[in-house]
Length: 413
Image (cartoon, rainbow, N blue to C red; front, top):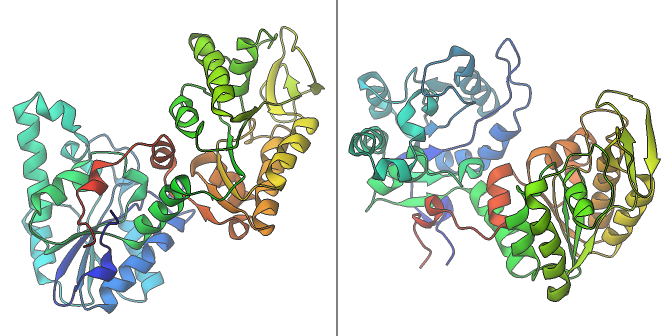
């Protein structure tokens, strides 16, 4: 069932509590270096203000570990929101307490209040599994959520980046607001439409490109995709675990020895499912992981003392060829150590191939994290269909998991 969104409710004269993901990068002087997450929240924010609602925004920033840390204050976000909205966005120096509640109570239609970093309180990140076994922690988390819930008439979740977490603001707050409208924001709706709907009903051929360092991080994704995709293209350091499982020499390349049997089994399972697994045919290897390190291209076994740090030129051509006729593409994870040259070439080549496939009519989804960074770094963001705002959340959706903080939201009738 589809979830209700802001478009399905009347916010006029109501106080709306919206959980956003304003976990923006800050420099040493606490200046925002990318406001992308703020921009992504604007459609939901504007819809509530245009509808005559009074808006209370809440978010986390960084990992302050339950303590106040001025370097992780949301004050710069309030300033940036004021600039992009063209109105004065008030800032509460706490997310609970009498002063914050008074500020929230005084809000009128068209006004916005941003609460301070939720993670300044340890209660925000207490896991429900832990709380079930500790009555004091359960009570603390519930009391914290109750204070937040008490400020508003409507709850909106628009934080896809934390959709896989059972934080107080994500699940306990809407739980406490049972009987009041609890809906999804437009960003959540967009993420579910692209990621969820694409997996359920993809246009074929459907190609998944998976990279990154660890097979262990992607096992669930591979298992879930085997009977959904036509091809899985595997790059990044995780490829070397598959190579070793096939009996190849990988030198000093990163390898998860505990997952060799699993990697071998995944290749067998893929064959049985009729899913093609495409591994690199060559690697760029070096003895040191550093900028412009001496390197060479190896097409077979890697000798001791050398490590694979990127896919080679033949693999770039092979991978691009697999994407050329695709109608649906999902990409998650870089092809090498893309933070430094020359080991960024494989990731760049895949980014260009994904953009080209999109131009030729494919629906392309970039699964957040490093893949999203690579696409943006190359100026290709407007040449793909969708860039997910949640790295961990998009991975878990690709694994076929459901999120209880989304399940608790109201269903469309």
